[in-house]
Image (cartoon, rainbow, N blue to C red; front, side, top):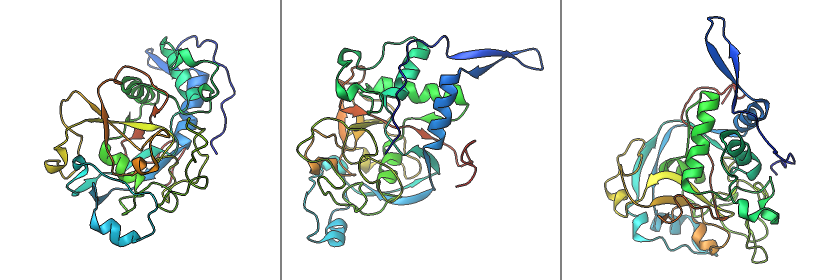
Length: 296
């Protein structure tokens, strides 16, 4: 279970505190709250080793692998096909969805209004719950972490997200510990239709929590229903332009089948509008050891 953030952020004086470098130039050291956030974030990163996989709906291969074990069937749309080979460079991804406690540090440091401010007082607006954000809010948070840390933080691409959710491309229907959905065991049951603190249920075999269920997760890509038929085979970044952004993972208000690792969601209405059911996690696009994670 992810540790709770029980600190109320009243005010952050500045995003960075200036220091004098030996050369006489101003350099910047993150304020204590930001430095603690960076260290915590780096400690929560999982290394995802480079490799290749068949991205998209595996169809008969999935049916053959699971036979009659699948209780909750998913119904991928045509935009999840064809399955196509993708090769990705190594990267790191956060094992948890970003929380309000983390995102509030960002908004305080940058002078923005806190996300979902209108819902202050709701149980799921507590610091330890996944932050409900717009696509822009998710993108800007990851970019800001990159500015503060000097590391190449970003929203994951759709391919990076799916590769990690499938534990480096395994043929599974869901991103759970077993690859299946078991309500109340590795997935929420019908008694709870609101987000819950990340880490409530077991992770997938690679160590990632809540990539099926909890909140939908924003990815970097623009949406194109035909993209899988023309996607580059190496490190695809999605279409160059578009009007809708992709989200993945299936939210808690979805049916369990909608939380499949291959189903693609898309929207244009939430690019700059916050909804409690839309969250995110960040990646670091490097294969080098992180400052607090010297081995992988």
